[in-house]
Length: 316
Image (cartoon, one colour):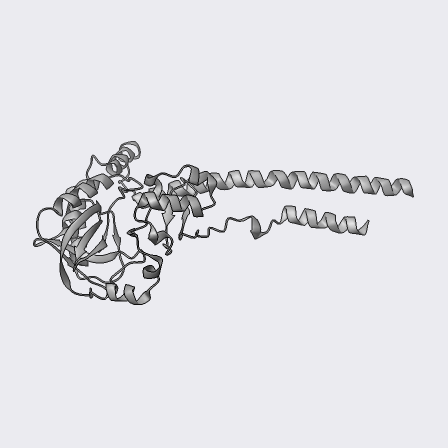
């Protein structure tokens, strides 16, 4: 009887206080990535030598299917659902990828506070492009500005920002200017000011009303120019700050109905709200699914306890 009571106590305590073993660990797979829970997009956070052997997304997709155990998301995997997170594929061998000396020598060809002639290889979106500098290709994140997304996730004015940037990059000689305290961000992208002829591209993008925020890694040389350009865009109603934009339309509707001043919503906040709503829904579903087995275990435990109690009374 004592053994039964002990076992019963263990069952009940396990049901009421589930351990961390039921939690999703969120670990990276052998490629250095994982699937995003909300839409099964594969995010390549920290590419391992295995991942760097892939020459393109198609090859990487095969590796994901081989090394990732999330069968549900693997079954939905397409090339459009692979987010390289700014990393570059190119068939780097595992020995080369693991050689710190080689990596250091390649990176040391550029220095902070210098200007380098560059040739456009690929325009990626409103604030990212690939350039050839000193005989090597660099995925380059434009310093300081953040434009709406237009690749894996398409945000309002993301396509407009991408078209604007790509068109400007074809209008003259390109020069990259390094600045700040680091050459590369955590995704191994080169950080630089981009000059097209005598025009600072970040400033032109901001004037067009296509900058929604600042991507700040420190103190930079042209910060004041970009902030001023963004203020001018807001005052002029350019781009995403115009009356016909989705942001301003929503704000104007609020003015008409409530007589209040418009508060321009941030796409980042909208995304956070959507994510919060989704997490709330997932939590409610998870809580519901968790409560059911707990309830059944408790009913079973008390039924068995009552049976043994009744049996002991009869034996007496």
